[in-house]
Length: 66
Image (cartoon, rainbow, N blue to C red; front, side):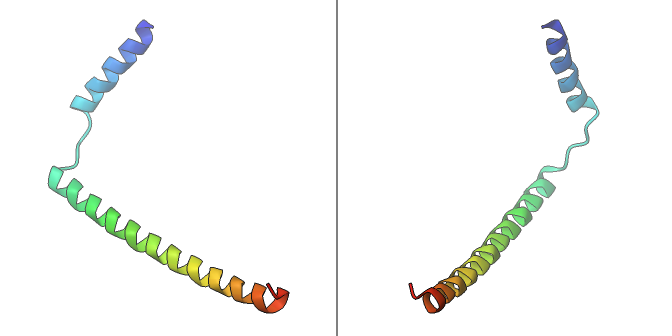
């Protein structure tokens, strides 16, 4: 158990002293960019899914008569 506690303490110390953190303004800007591209990508996938769904529905209706 002492090994785990020591590991956690050393990890926090490394995060505090050795890690270079992104400035807050840049982190906010990058978060907005990721959110916008995620929304655009999800809308594109939704559009392709809708087109394929309609196409398969048409094929099933004409070929299988359902």
